[in-house]
Amino acid sequence: MAKSIIKESEVIRNCIRNRINELDETLSKVCNNANSLGMKISIASLSKYLKKSKANNLTEEQIVWLCVRYCIPVTFIVGNARFEDGKMKFKLPPYNEDIAMKDLKIKFPANEKKMADKPRVQKNTVKVG
Image: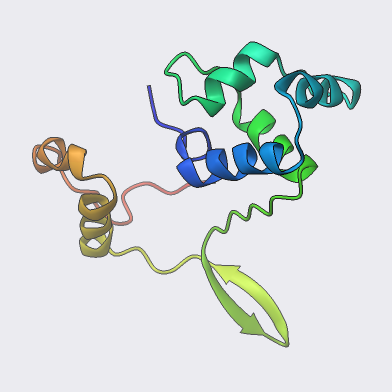
């Protein structure tokens, strides 16, 4: 199963835990509030998430919802930020196989051995949409 950047983030988990503690909230209050606002979160699921249990079953949506609800800014950016005509726009950089493989080795070192056995992407072999 693929890892989830949101679900695995210690930073997000710690921020949620710290905010709950700062507000002197109980897990019961947090879950009741979430449920009353339309986001179903069980006490057991939240507890397992905060304890980093492998049985944690909070969804990415529930985690992001908790961040928004408790004023924890979370930003996901895709592409490189550039200013054009006074506005920030995000553009995909040109594809570069060498940079991609280098980044994979840095960000996913456990997969390095598997990557060595795989063929590289052939540029312009498949057109999408």
